Length: 87
Image (cartoon, rainbow, N blue to C red):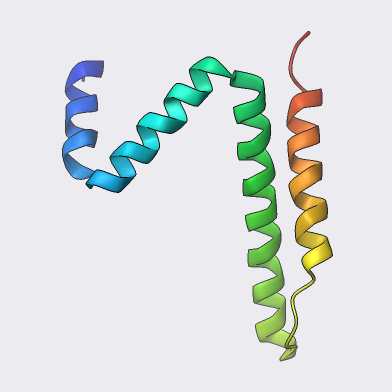
């Protein structure tokens, strides 16, 4: 499938807010690739940690999430992705 055709199909499936968010992300990725990738990686690492804590909380019937763990994963994910980039 041609890139233009696939782009049209994806854009027609997205609503207004996701479309704007994707456009903003792609613009930031073009302007600040390293920073954008670092922030994205940090956020995804923190979300992964949040998901893991949520699953563990359900298993153990614990009530509190470890916020410091989320922050550590946020920083670690961003730092790791930057250090892996070629120089």
